[in-house]
Amino acid sequence: AQKITQTQPGMFVQEKEAVTLDCTYDTSDPSYGLFWYKQPSSGEMIFLIYQGSYDQQNATEGRYSLNFQKARKSANLVISASQLGDSAMYFCAMREGRRDTGRRALTFGSGTRLQVQP
Amino acid sequence: GAVVSQHPSWVICKSGTSVKIECRSLDFQATTMFWYRQFPKQSLMLMATSNEGSKATYEQGVEKDKFLINHASLTLSTLTVTSAHPEDSSFYICSAEGGQGYEQYFGPGTRLTVT
Image (cartoon, each protein chain N blue to C red):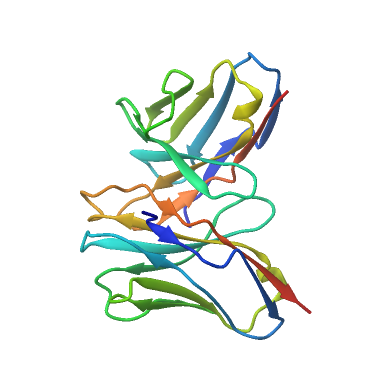
């Protein structure tokens, strides 16, 4: 079974509008962390936002927010006020287990290519 | 934030030769580094976990004799692709954990082309 599922291979959004990128995950571990990364054409992985499984509130970082619905095992990324520079590949990732004892490598989803149109 | 560098950023080599890729944590110590591989239009796949002072842990299906990993210090891990073949052409990215934080810091990646 896929650990991380991103069902949108590609998304279009108009500049200045908000967009939601979907991510669902599968784990039986009660302790885990969820990440979103942006990968522009240059290839670098840019960290956007993190949500811990025990965090009570949804994470926010500037224009990025994470809609964390634990019961549904979803961790959607919301980008508000899209900009042309947001055009890139976006990956959802998960680390399972406790930070100090669990598997620390990340498992990535297949990604969503976002294109922001002027 | 913490910085991870990779060298070289791109390399072209002939089939049968070996290529070494370096991953350095510039301003923090990393006891553990991770090596990922990304084929065009695909996601990142973990190849191995590199632990300072001990042997690397390889993911299933990754040939340890082909992809040699050395983590000789707290700031440097190297990946050597031995006897490279065209199917090894890929984007190789390392990451490192720093301090007490949850974040993984990624290097800029190395694009390997084997002709």
